[in-house]
Length: 162
Image (cartoon, rainbow, N blue to C red; front, side, top):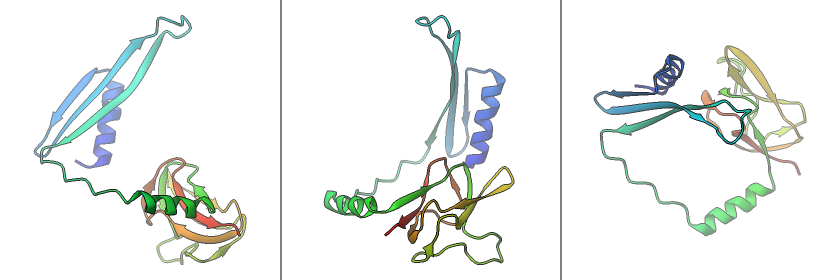
């Protein structure tokens, strides 16, 4: 079961009015709970609808976590990124580095960009939204792979304004 099917299942359960649904398949167990909670402290709030909650538990044992980077390495990385400006996604959608599959990339690492230059496009609901640079500077890092889903406010680019 892929993430799209899980999201559709959550939407379906939320619309159906069911309070809890459990689904077990070969390698996945999903439980979706919705609920209503009365708010007694403020009479203006009649009911507060809680969003659906989904928990996915794999049947196989989880893989051991990857050890975190040493604290010193994290501190150096934070100091370096503090001098850069982060361009974030203004919408949820799919990130593309090119205007079309047969066209060149909008920007490359090391490229100088000016305020208003198009850095990428984000597709949301079959609409392609151009994301423009907010500042002039040099592209230091591209934080997202081409054709990847992005969330609201997710960092996309690091730009050195100097």
